[in-house]
Image 1: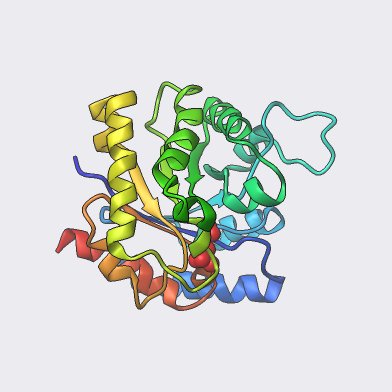
Image 2: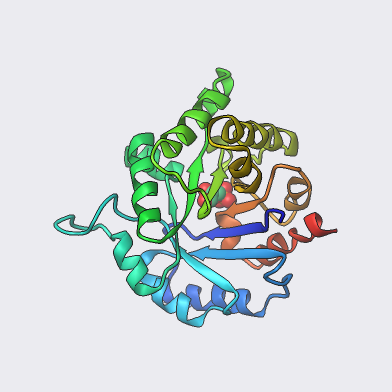
Length: 253
Ligand SMILES: O=C[C@H](O)COP(=O)(O)O
């Protein structure tokens, strides 16, 4: 079976109750391909997860944007994987570059989080990606491989993992990676999985792209053989997210 196209919408730290209502309306009214063709997961801030989950069309799922690295307890401000499971939130984004850079999350810490969240039964969207400085110094492949390795060392089962390749220089900047740049890194990541995990995991694990994805650039990106979907930030708050979901048809055409 092929890899089902995956479109995630990461709302980041955005939204009021009114805005959330509007976005949910857009999502619920949009014409999109069937769930056989595309998996759609939206990730509101924690406080809006219950309301979005209860109002969202049933074929779309929700994800949290983060969770704690171990069992809950005296960790002020944190949300545990167990709490997400308890609320019926099936997925979580981990290792987003904003958390790596602004909050100092190391690859090892992200790997620990991925392992713990998976062990609690969550599905994980695990983010990797290089900074502009790392790209310009030619270390992109080393960086994304090392970030992936820190996860691979801690988990055995990749069934519930989606890798999101998000070059930091493309996030929120309007500077999208070219289809060739994205394909090159996705192919390297798949090859890394093939060599270091297994050919089966490499073949079945979805590797999605994030960074300034819009309705205008999504189709050409979606046409790349190793690109299995998107993790969308800014555009996931707008009507154009529906167009991005529809780029899944590029694969099934
Ligand atoms: O998680 C999403 C990414 O950070 C992409 O954000 P962006 O689409 O606003 O560039």
